Length: 245
Ligand SMILES: [Mg+2]
Image (cartoon, rainbow, N blue to C red; front, side):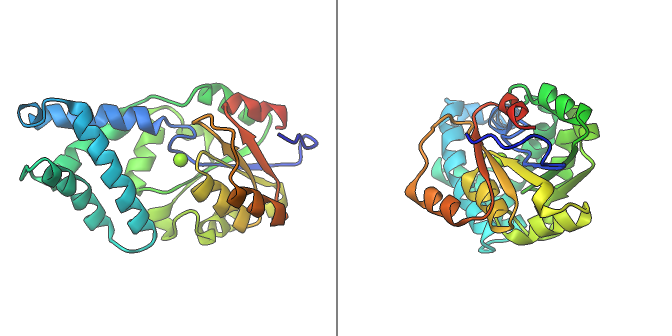
């Protein structure tokens, strides 16, 4: 990781899911709660079968939603509708989705060192923001329930802004609304395709929080980095932000 001179940045934009809020753990727990509540054990003995099927379907549908192939309501119904179809069940998908969403924001698992690093950045005078793809009511609840809301000056949610990362519109909207200059802004996120590429295209320096730990950079990524005027950092623990912030 190249280390730039300190204090170059003033405004730090964080992704929420799997960058600060441990989406993977929390989603798993929330689905388990909904699964139990709906007595699905009698039809699907192993919850993990249900979970992995759902995950594959949900990832594909989110991609369609981001590309404007399907609407929010289609996404919500189909992610569980298709999962139930796979198991030959005719369970009420909308109802199940409501149970899942209700359980979701109450989950409080955070990414390692999230509190410590947010506290550090705040004490150093950085202005902190969130840019997140998701539904407004859900994302806001997650921040409030996990005690994180007070760290952030503003939360930019794709549903509200009507633009999804990596679309540069949401980044430009966030910069403008927060009176941030590109040169003194930094985007931190776990997804190369969504957070890093989006910020890079919007002219903002980026930190790829490589949560999975794979250190390999693809040729495609290398090409983007080479031709961009922005800086790209890579970390695998939030604590490493302290090395240059
Ligand atoms: Mg994320």
